[in-house]
Length: 450
Image 1 (cartoon, rainbow, N blue to C red):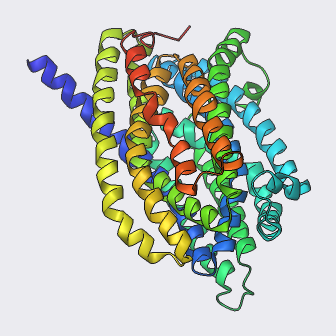
Image 2: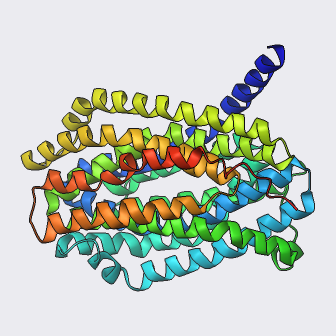
């Protein structure tokens, strides 16, 4: 009993220590979207809706970057637990190479052909024009986002998680303040509206990169040398790609699928677009706790698996799975409680206001599946390299069920907006039984290190 109590105390202490900074960081990043929606929503819903559609490009980029940084976290956590600094630097160097390529491609697309990218999300000329202006400026920030996120991920892996949260605090505070200045035209500046939000994001990202870069070269931090960015052990690169490809497949399926949901809603009119934009921001804010536990739990389980403590890693995974249901139900209750206040704050048309209330109610029940699947699939499964399951489950639940139903309902059968929105929420709750069945196979209980 004494040993079990010690293990429990160790687990929960470490989980809280890692979760709080990561959850705060996730919350702060979500608050940027909240600030954009709140400030632009106080002007008019077209500005808010257009920016919501435009930022789907960044959403896809972040999904792809997340696959790279998640691979860095998965392999890095196991090598860090073994104190294998050489291979840890190799993993980090490989990750940087991939994020630079991804960021460059995204930035060029947003700067050169923003109108064509916006045409995928809306057929409204006004929304396209506003969104294109946003992307031309924000695209430059997408060029540097990947590098800063890779540096911050390394801090999390190497026990500097509080510093990563501090960087996010500074970045978000700067972003929100500049949002107000540039959007509304404070302190003598001309009002820039959506373009002001883009400029604020660009300046904040530059500051984030400069801070992360300067901190990473302090003595207690681990960063690759110049040669580590070019030369790596071939076997480590092979391990990196083997771990990353399923994550990339799953990330693309999920990211493009989620963007498709937004595009479908965007073709149902400005009222549906505006309501969906607000509901999405609220959803992302309430996901912060489960995102924090997902990342923290993955590091903890990965640390144990990396040093060969497979049974302890398995026990921690089971504990995280049970916690995911509690968090999911808590998020449902919280969203239902907040719905009247959120709907009352936003300046929307009567139709959009009605849509928003019911979208928030529908999303509240969706949160159960979202929390469970995020913690179990992206945290526990990924910690042991079991990354293929996510891709398989997304093919079936999202691409074979939710997206076809939503598209048919919107463009063929012309279902009511809220029915189409319900279709976009089917994927998460529907796959919980499958996730629990796969969890019980314990394929994720593996040591990935060399």
